[in-house]
Image (tube, rainbow, N blue to C red; front, top):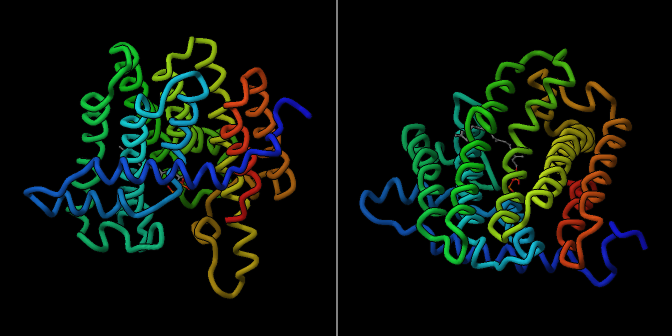
Length: 302
Ligand code: GRG
């Protein structure tokens, strides 16, 4: 068996279900509705709306991989989901993607209005940093500071916001270059996945080389995630032809398949996943969740 294969006795579905329940329980406790209720209710509406909880799970799995514990990483895991959730709230606003549904429910602004949705996003973003600083225990202060610094970078103009602004500028431009497309997705999607993995490593006490290796793992799965998303957008559109047209097709945006074609896009995604798994080769059995999550990214069908 190759060192990067998932062990036969490891079941990803069970792992994700178990870890997701732990994250849900911690998130449930993280935010209480007090005066002024509207803002807390709006924050909770989106934070507790489901989702795969992939970023918190990556953080927890990586912390355990490097010898840390779940309690050391849980506040940061929750904060990552707060940041992810706020980015979705803002992304769905009429001024951005203008979506009515998210995670199978009405979007935040459809329920609470644009004004409250903007503020709920702002409040979740601020609370994420407060939450890490306030709740993290059993971790050296330098490591907590490093996590806060890395998360700030991943969210701001050098991360999610930078990716989003280039994405908005590429609307209606099907001739966008592959370099620009990579920039968008490395910042919009991979940056938060990267800090999810790396923060788990930092909180668990990993050394510099280990952090770098795990950072490369995360960036590779982040880009692959987006390529597969683009592929699924086309293949599910083809399947549902007559029902709906994929948003990117409608918006005339460049996608990986529109530049490379479907087959080459799948090959590139597979190569990124293999490169990600190669970074894990020297770790022990606790790498199983990260290996399996990498495989799941290219194998998923929705
Ligand atoms: C971050 C300050 C700040 C502002 C927001 C709107 C914006 C700037 C950035 C857009 C970020 C964005 C929406 C990226 C797409 C991320 C993505 C791949 C979402 C889907 O993630 P999943 O599949 O979703 O993990 P669930 O619902 O399972 O969590």
